Image (cartoon, rainbow, N blue to C red):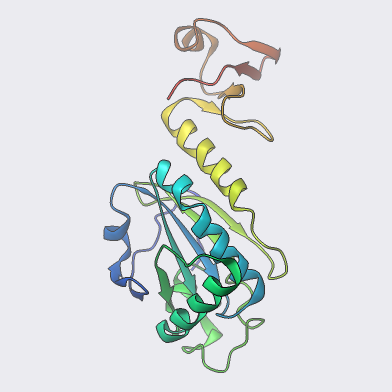
Length: 220
């Protein structure tokens, strides 16, 4: 299936390294990151699983639940976790979904419908499009999608930055400019007329163009 921003995130039941989950129930009222991998024991993904484990305090501070997916079995996931501890110095501290029948990868549009029904015999290159990050809001809608090639490790600090923006702009009628970081100026969205913006931002704003109104970041 094809997903798009604002679409409902598909629900599913799956086996994970932390037991069976019903995805929407598992998310609850939190935000969620689902990030996928084409196969276990792949080098770039090994470093990514360790990187995410080290960043878990930051995700938790933002109320974000983290779950991984790899197109392999639970037994392989558990063996891979041992390698991650050995090479990255930390074990995955979040569940990893087993997808040996390719069902969830297809459900999220990461593999084509004709990819078959088993991971057996498929290489990482066969599954190379299962390299996506989905940020899902508390209302279970897709808020962000990024897909990386197999040779490019993901920057999860950038994903944290994007989550900061998503959470801020959901609370306030603002957008964040290029390279924005917490505490920097934001943009009043065009849908807010000046008359309303004056009530929302009584201290005023800087407008180099009428459609580009920069204002101090609102308090949480």
